[in-house]
Image 1 (cartoon, rainbow, N blue to C red):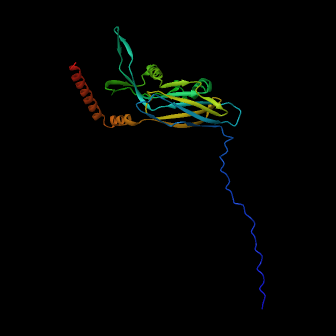
Image 2 (image 1 turned 60 degrees about the vertical axis):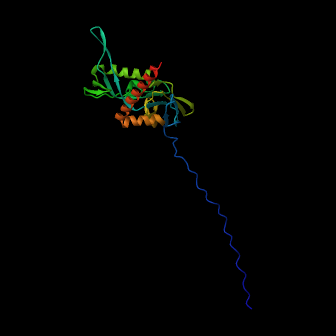
Length: 275
């Protein structure tokens, strides 16, 4: 009988530790001078109980050096036409002049900064960027013409020559009185090293639409970085339905308003006739 050789010893493979994926690492930005920002709420809903809103804009400044920087926040609402009239004295009587229409004035405009804008950048730089109420771009066509707006004929649309700046100041003054234009030279505050915050105050009369926010980073009077944000202010609920109906079918909306007013007047007359 032939003996059977014993089986070879089992070969034990060395233990292999499970491969752990390398953790993801962010891109190194230590050498970049830049700014990043965000809003606590990018959508504001307007209903019958809307009494204004306060939105916090926050962000961080990545500054690899020791040279100080400044932050400027600019929030601009949707453009809307502005109709103005001017009191003129004619033969001892004060009369309204022909209406003047500015077609491109923003419905909302605010700036907030770490210090006054004139200390951050020079006049030319601010004018080029359109930063600040004094450098706000309010469009009026080059040509002089008359149109019919707001049910009024012969509305003047022009740059008004030498009087343009006076009319422009009037637009800004009226919007500031309505809390739609605001300038806060100390509206941006640093809460920690590199971390800042600012508040955007929306009044009850804030127009609906898309708002554009620009967060500028200045150093030595020059813009070195910018972060662009979008804010939406929209009507909701019953107010939104009425708003959309009035704009989609204005003739039917006007007819319904007239009928409703006539019916209300008729019912009121019948009610008070009994007393």
